[in-house]
Length: 461
Image 1 (spheres, rainbow, N blue to C red):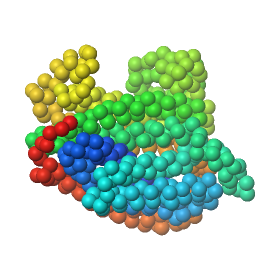
Image 2: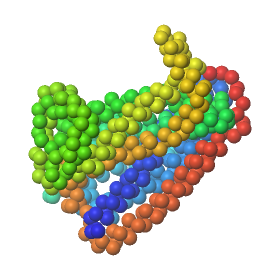
Image 3: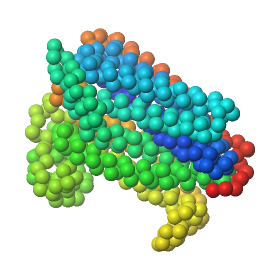
């Protein structure tokens, strides 16, 4: 393998590894903040114990995410110096603000939260975790601003062989960024909700700390359902943006070869990239693709043959990743709805006319308690969906580093293949060790539970 391919594999591996930790950091901080807020408002110590328990898992995940994120940015200088030189004027302010403002705000208030349980008032302590959650989301905003600029470059001019920033406000407010950010954050929230659901379901199956984990399950159920519905809505908006600004990526996502008005969407097909066609197509929905891409039945959708082969993204990985991601998205909505049904008997929703009929479905859990294992076994699936989303976003942008501006081949370093191979192997070994430690600690403390102090119910909501 040449140095370019090795550098691409290394960066892809590092980015996907790093993003195993980012979503849980974003969403779990909000869930912990909700739990501690309930404690402050009600005085119920169970919610304080819940904030402590889930907060411990948040801290473990946060620590490894920080380490992997630093290594990710380090590669801009080692493996992609031409890219760094080209986009430095745009990327520099975005990454600097993320590091010096958002990250330091997040880490500072997290330290106050960790050590401040007995040193500051409960209200101020709860405010700290909300500030951590807010800073995490703001940090994601600046990172997504940089990524969205690579997907849809705006607010710049090419001078002296490099992109120079001309309109900072346009870069940080473009619609592509807003849609991408909301899709990523809602996906992170959904992942965190299902993480809490899965861990809680495990303890409910084993009848450990049932009051504690029933309350955790209830909060996570509503959080996961809301987030999953938001993911679906934002995914639809994201599809419109991609069809408008990155039509080659959209064509690869749907394996559309010919430019077609009122384009048909097929439920099942197999791409044949070598022959520029699909091997077979089943379940055609006339005009469905035009409706999906532009919310217009008659709109023309561009096919892959509009671009030369060297300017197209690889079709099969983008197509499969997109289809599996979307399928998982619908599964998450159904699973979150099932979780809400499970907690309905103790919910204020019972006061809503017509909701009581849903209690019929709670008998499923009473008759088949093993159904809770579905939530436990589903913990990895949101991780899979989010990683596939990044495959669609990044592989679908190929062959461009900066869309329609800078090719991948023009952004790499002039290093020897053995140098790229050595660093790639080093990253694999180090990150594998970090991953093993992180998942071991998460599994250990999640399985252990909150301890005997939180086992006895204390009353209250």
